[in-house]
Image 1: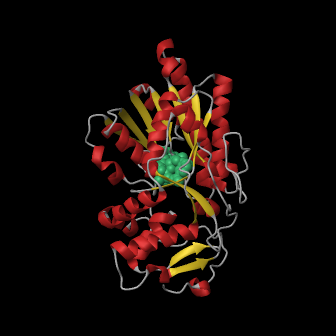
Image 2 (image 1 turned 135 degrees about the horizontal axis):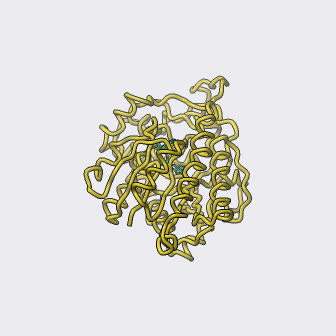
Image 3 (image 1 turned 30 degrees about the horizontal axis):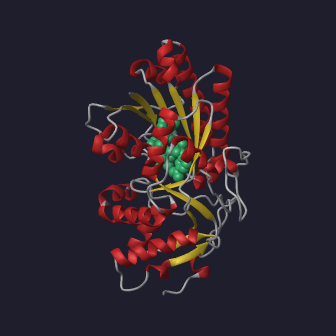
Length: 363
Ligand code: NAD
């Protein structure tokens, strides 16, 4: 099997590349622009494998995308390339509109022309899986969960751009018969995640004895999924999912942001004792504008139709993740020296409240 993966040098994409090449022996072409969020060290475990190739290219480039399909002759596509950080989308949405919407359109057109020239036999099995987010559904109150029927109601420039791309994916199926499938997943975490995202940022700040800034009052709820569980779900959906359909992916692991940070502190107290509890560094900072209150995914369809279930609980997954960052300094030290040193993003000109505004006592 030959799979064209876009964004395979990012967090989830590199996990897919390692899994497909390393465990499933699938031939992979990784199409990635290598933006600030990419890291080729994340695909190093398989980068010398004969089943792996990298194409450094922008998905917004129609000539290069057409050539990628023609040269590689994929049996399927897993499309992950995107601008992904909500905070960055607040201060600079242009790149999100360009890559997430125009880039998806360019890729769809390249896939459509390629698909139309395939033999009938190869057309039967070709699939285009678009990897999207539960953030397209907006925010929940205290009760309920997102299902595949939940109406779209995105809040941030990031989630709006992903929602737009989901609509393009469905339209290319309905209008042109391209065999597309959409997956909408909750927050991922695990090894190799870029340290601007909540969990790695908190682990590394705790390690450095820096403040652990929690947005607002920390009560926002997210449904966390360990990245390797997501990867298994995506390969299953690519092979066995129903064309023209959507699948929600989530770990049934709802946590408040403050709960996540406190759990990381407990693990850091165990694995990296500092003589005091790391909780003393937790502080509350100005909330993210448009911050959704709660996300929760109902993954019943994926569980019952395709037999998927998450292997990791939040407790097992977060422990593995904290250990990985402690054991893999070289990976994140180069990121922190280079493109991102841990600064606050996404305030859009508003002033930060002093970190000391609400400081928690050490336990
Ligand atoms: P990431 O930011 O870690 O990686 C994105 C990758 O895409 C990078 O390697 C980057 O270089 C590449 N890229 C960006 N613009 C490109 C372009 N124009 N052309 C080619 N490559 C480009 O992202 P991630 O967290 O791994 O997320 C991957 C996908 O999964 C995204 O589509 C995201 O919306 C979706 N998703 C992520 C999460 C999550 O919690 N991280 C949850 C649900 C869905």
